[in-house]
Image 1 (cartoon, rainbow, N blue to C red):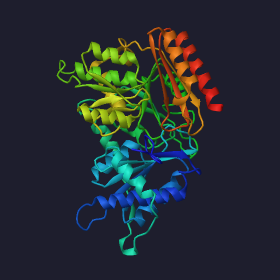
Image 2: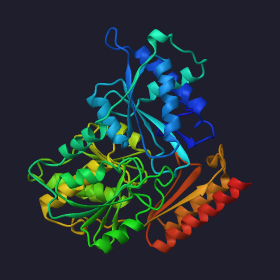
Image 3: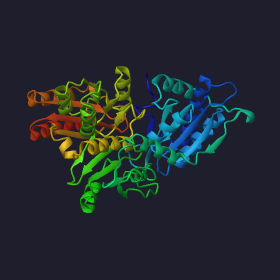
Image 4: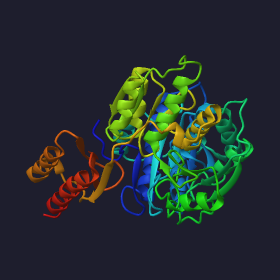
Length: 454
């Protein structure tokens, strides 16, 4: 599909600059509403959508514009306020709604915002439906007569419902008593949810990043900035630190020594534990990663005789691969982890609970559970590029990439890819020794900067 407005994870951008302006969001709500209305439902019933958001100051404006657009299209709106992205996915499915909408720019700074959609089944909106919404956006906006406008109401118990759902994914015969956990909510959507989940399961919880002011989301806290969490875990002598991002769909863990564990390592822990539980009767049918997944993980699954496949970068592509193959486990090194037997989308809280299940049932620490996984060094550089810059047409960049691959002498790999959410080209080099991959990554990045500014 040719995407004009939708990226890999909905519509996203700097607030006040197209497309994140109130007039566009109003039209987006109307267009999505008309597409949903055209899909039909029970006779005489209006379609209904759930709208949740993170803690950005711009969320109020965008929520109001979306609500007006849906109402004008004859779609009822349920507003749940700040709630993690996976919480919106869960409630959309639990309440049998037509769709769910999340207002969030995930791990981006507060000045950005975004809009992403879930189908009534709790999965990301299919490309075909996004395509119909894009087409409808090109048509003039209208408005239903008063008798056919959508209504709006608040869902007052949304956080409580989602807390109970998260707890239900943890084995009923286990608890977290005796565990001291530092939970970092990035001043984001999980600030009223995540600490409560772990506390109600028995843990001693020390919460940080739980005082959002509209401007501090992801600022020095959360999964994209774990240094503060690592210091706090060591200072409080906690067993673990759990870091979520702004919309709580990704997670990173830190142990008592301050060592951080990324999505690749956590996915390995979950998969290996499932394989060992019940003498291998729960062996994963297969595990999905992405082009960014560390090669060490692929080799480890090969040793375990567990099939492994790579998808394009982005949790929606991991999900597509899992559903295509009928597998349930997959993820990204950024901390998006999918356990489709637990939830329909990546969920930072649920993923952390799966790791804690492995620790509880095995009696082992994170360091012990990952001791046989020796990660290949990776260097990832984000190089700013202007909008529309076609890096694939640059002979200089192609030569720099080829030279870097040659210098690694088959002991590493090079990956260049544009971000789906930011105007940057990601340069990733993986292999050994570290000095060689750092040199290779910097050489490519220098060429990209030169070509992008030419």
